[in-house]
Image (cartoon, rainbow over all chains, first blue to last red):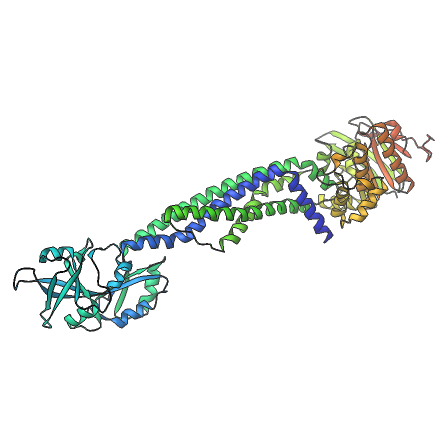
Length: 385
Length: 228
């Protein structure tokens, strides 16, 4: 205990003696670890933030009967099974579609019916799965509305309807016909602009396909969706979940580029921190050459002196790492606010990681200075040579 | 057999620079020996050998029966730590440690740092009241006395002093030499390198070196008078 007390006394006083030098090394560690901690904090959140940002571009997974299936339809229960395989907090939304051919009366022209694609869907999921849809008027309020319809912009133009008009939809195969009020006209930039949308339950009734759907779109957060999809597909028969390549791959490419850039920046910062700390430690060893020689003359072994220097380096690194993490976390918040307009979450694992990294950097940077310690000859130093 | 024995010791640097040339010497326990000679005579080399900071090129150096000629650096450090107390001309105190802590440094590398014992050692050299002062707050004489306290703290067999009064004024020189006298009277073995013939004459025996060789070594009585 007394030996440890004396050891700590020597180490503490050695720090105090060279405040300015120690401050330089400390500053280098704080800045280096700060930037790295900040980058890692942002990086861990970036996949989530990116994923959230990219959800604006729509679904990233699609569920459909597999290619071998004779019937291109599936039951709503099959959809529920797939839904249950995702974590609730990762599943932004999912929207099933049932397609069928119907005829719609054109406005103002008696008995002229034009073929249209009738789509049954859940409108409450549009904001989650297709947030880019532009709606003139309103979407259907809930799943039980059975007297309203939403039509695509092109279909509305072709048939001559506006919001508030009534449109008659009929299905020849079932002989069913409904008069529906147009609550909204949508612009999507894709084939949906030419389609007519009703609630899924109404479409199933009109088309005579209770509980059936053809396809379902999912918007899911997270990385490595492909492997998740593969796992899910192994557990189901007759249906297949697939990533929508365009969205998923662009997400992956951006993340990979950011990851490479981050690693490069981290390497450069680590190198510059190492150089700065190493140079400072070398100066400290040179300045303390006489003291080291004296200690050796008094009976200190190389291991004693090396332990003292490495302890100094480790303390410097440890405290620098923790302070650096604190600053890095603040930096990450600044980045999060300016780039994603949101805060970066606190991740406890980055705290010990910053601490260990800083201690390692500090100790590695001391390897060359410590080698100088071994070479110091007490006789030569004490003679003032 | 003496505490220190040198048998045909030579130290050769490079191919033929002989710092010490075939020296044989025996120093008994309790003896005070001064090593004298002009610059370049080999005093420092001899001090380094006996202080276990170097090994001879030829011959045998024995300290308390241990032949250090074949020891490696680690083993030499151990012998130095266990057997020798060093006093330097330049004092060589750790500047950021107080007087008592400077004494404790020697304890720390030897065995255990005991502050009470270190303070007693300072009292022994008349510096009990200066224990908490930094070296820069002490006079040259006081620094040298801290150095002597540090040399004594581990009860070494031999006190090896290199020009201990070389950096002191007359008053402090007398204080330090009185201290060496006391230590000698208490039975310590002292080996002191000095340029100053007056300081050298305080020893029981003078060893004169010239160009690495021993010259006549006059014997001096305990009362510091020349007998042969």
